[in-house]
Image (cartoon, rainbow, N blue to C red; front, top):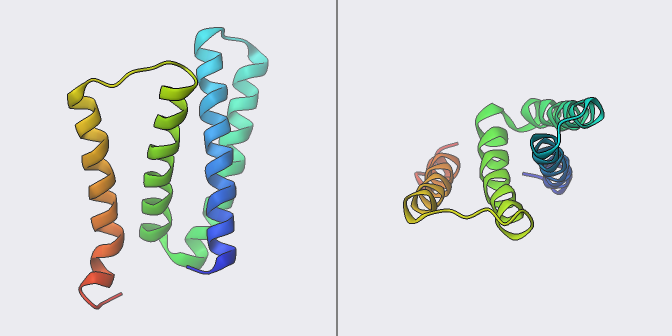
Length: 113
């Protein structure tokens, strides 16, 4: 993935993270403005993802985005919203990260792309 692709992935991750935070805020105190903001942010993130899919393919783009979002959303949920994961949930997050890593890196580890 090129530097420009990584930059786009970073921007989309920030946008999706802001969308998740807006969704959490809407969940705690629903309002029309919060749902509109949430939808706009998710739409912007998905528009960037469309460019990444065109450039790098669907499997790589979505796999990388999924694992980065999984980690970043959990960090925000735990650090800023005081949410907690029990041992089984934490194991699930770790296994999900490992699964996406294997999906993403598997073809390169086998020498095919």
